[in-house]
Image (cartoon, rainbow, N blue to C red; front, side, top):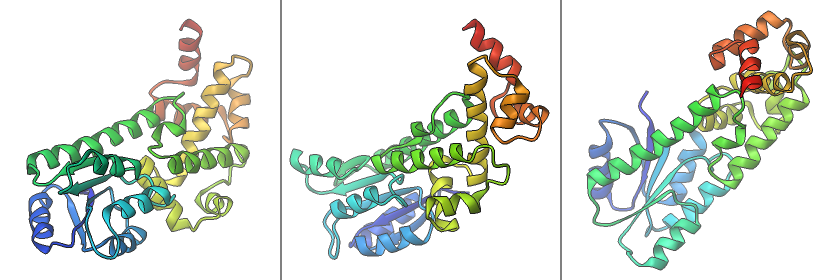
Length: 254
């Protein structure tokens, strides 16, 4: 599926131009002000926001601040477009949490490059987290709100690690969030479903316990919510590309 971009500008000509220019690579949503944009963000998954700064109802700076301060949207990268080329204007945008700041008139090729770099870098971070037995969940955080959210998810899963029934329904209740909201947030920030993230958290805890060298695979499997060491070993190898015993050997020789 194409990544979804939300473009916000009160100038219909610019909206049409950007929609046509970016529409081949991305699925495009549009809004004419910040308030309309927030409604779209609350209703569907968006991978990146491109916003003008000077708009009625809600300007781009305020929109960016709202996006980055809301736990449901804080992970979404924001590119601000503006005719203001003063240093103070750039500083204002960055202080609001903007990921990039592009002056008008701008090169379409430059905008394409900025979008691609932001999305590619985030995907690399997600893949690194998923494939590494030792990388912490906070590595995927891009804002303070993201970090607090991910830390809470991590703590709740660890608190219920031995509960083999732990799933998205339980996690949503513990997080005090609706199931769809939790699902969308975790999917967007990690490219994982809640159940996949629960499983990876179990496996990473297993790796940490195995690295200490005090427990057997059987003991670790029971502690992290697996019914058998063979089930843990299969999932561990599938996720990280090596068996638990191979991981222990690598830690011993490193």
